[in-house]
Image (cartoon, rainbow over all chains, first blue to last red; front, side, top):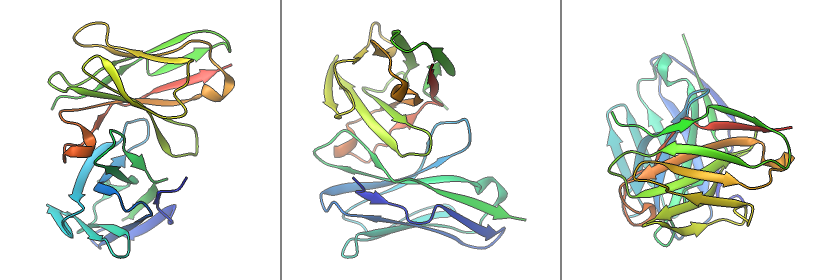
Length: 112
Length: 117
């Protein structure tokens, strides 16, 4: 059951450049999309979210874009910093549900 | 910043034994959740809890699992008779509002690594 898909297991980006993490979903009933960041030995930390009625949400260096027709969202980090090295999970929830459905995650490496 | 705390950080248990994982959610939160992540796999939803009862559960959450909020602060997950395949990282989460109807995110603890021998 792959309702939320992150097809890139890892991504390396030079410090200062833009990091773009991608996510696809299959369930058109999803109402909210969330990005979580996870360091080793820690739990997922909420980063940013977007409602399905919007196409962009920005918070400091982080911007999430939603393309509903393509069932695709992306997280942009500008500029990338060393502390951004972590696993990033794309997640989604539907109005009828309590649960968050997670993707498998993308490991982001920020190179000096 | 308030956070979700989980104890213990690592639990080793013999197969067939009962185990209780403990969580202290963020104090003003009303919705509580358990998730698990088997090594190399996705974070999977187990159960949600609101107003002292289960509001949603997944297929994974069978009769061997139970949850309880024994007092005003703790939220526990009990596995009655553990199996090898229960070995995973278990995450507790809490939120102020119901996930599906708000943009309120779920806040996660750092997890309990459960190892079944």
